[in-house]
Image (cartoon, rainbow, N blue to C red; front, side):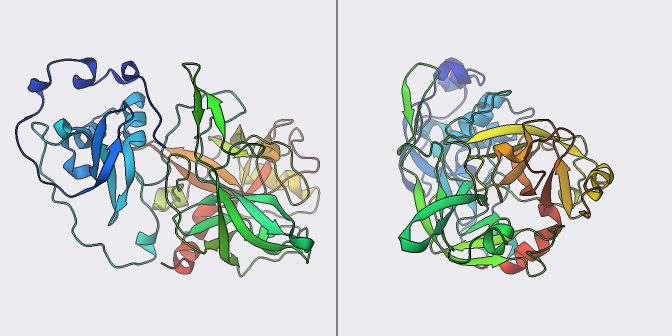
Length: 398
């Protein structure tokens, strides 16, 4: 679903502000480029879905510095898929031959499937799709579209969701190992699926009222069976320390990306793998689902700041719990922390080092915290995803 956007909200480039279009493109020059079907732009224009490189106006807009938030939102909502690792964009005819743009030859063949290119790259993942509202604790309907609910089948065929996860490509979800083989998971439960595209667990489809007072609805959620649950081989379920609390869920089929189902990026670069996150404000989000409880029907979020591991070690040592560098501590404010997240759900950080392409990446996986959660002075503990990039890339398959 592509949601309508007021044109005035994007009145930043000359074309969008209603200046003469003849100043910016060649309307009569024929352009023969591969297309992948018809589409509707965020401004409700009929267009063709083509490789971003072939849509000269939008390609140039992406490279502009600084990239305005309104332009970033328009670009994100104009995406219409991927082909051979290339982003596809919903491109009106007049955008194709924008003046003074260097020619880019699109790739004609997909590269061999290797672990490194099985993961989407920035621009394909972690998109800042939603015009989010800061300071609130309820997410917007399309915020954090990589979030998943983990489904368990219980005796008698009953099903329930008791953990969270994050979509990282079309076939894999990352969650916590304790959601796969943890001691709190009853032995007669089977991890059988994931739910994607969810926002309000009491409705289907989900709808919210937009800024114009109109009802804006998402497509129905998607329940996808899990083919294989892969707990980290060094995870020890009975350990109080919960080292290596990370797992991969392979889905039975590839999922189709939409505005409401998209992958999050992983911390693949060297600087993100080794980042400390001390004092960095991040998001933790979810429905508050744990192995035994559920606290919200709406997807919630909270801002948490990274806490130095040395300080966190001192706190948890009083409970005879050891922490190591493969774990991140964040939060510690009363009533916040992972109470608004799910076991196995994401700790989300924003990489904005490249101004033309800011994106969200998965800094951590919700592991454990104090009981009851959200105690003042007790940060939540997360598995540091950057330390497990080699394992992830070695484990995932086409």
